Image (cartoon, rainbow, N blue to C red):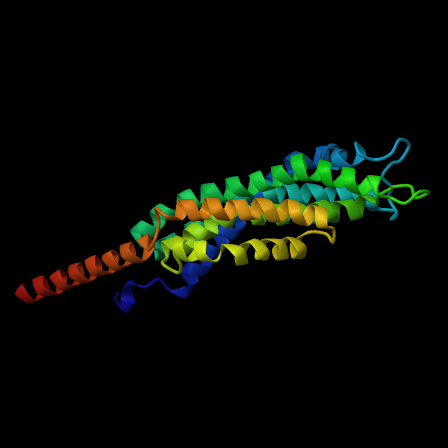
Length: 265
């Protein structure tokens, strides 16, 4: 590619600013639409714990401003989560000009599947993990201890689990990408199953609060998703590398033809 064909740095910075503004606007629009319902959103998120608390127990606020700021903080998190597909699309639109044609075809399915799996992970945490974990934790409190969780501490706890399960459910996408680029193969991954199984529990220990219950509920789905990724990756083994090499060969051939035609003229 000739030097005159390359875009100057200022052009890339302007494009980056445009993509960042679009992402910020998307988050802001969703936040403004949801902020009026901030207390209702917090009530929905806290429902799995409240339903498991002993009769007469309630959540508490230890800081003076917590009843106001905690629901607002949760609404910001929700806005970021809901706008994730838009943010990912803006990222893709920024880097798309630098990708080969076969790579651009691969990006959109990956964006859709990664967003869908992230939301499925959050839904799994809310509908499956929370009722089981909170039911177990509230019933193991010592005699004489009243379970009254601080609302800000609860928000930090559930957001940690949401992010952990959302990220863990991205395992199939990561495996497909690695096999597509030729970094590894399904056969190599199958041989490492015992290590992956142990590694899933180690990751669960690092990403979740220090209780074996939530760690197990994260590790088992993560390993199952690993098997799903290995199964799906059979259709993408080395495809990215082959397509990239073919694209480079075609580009080199076209460039050689252009030079040949210039000489003839």
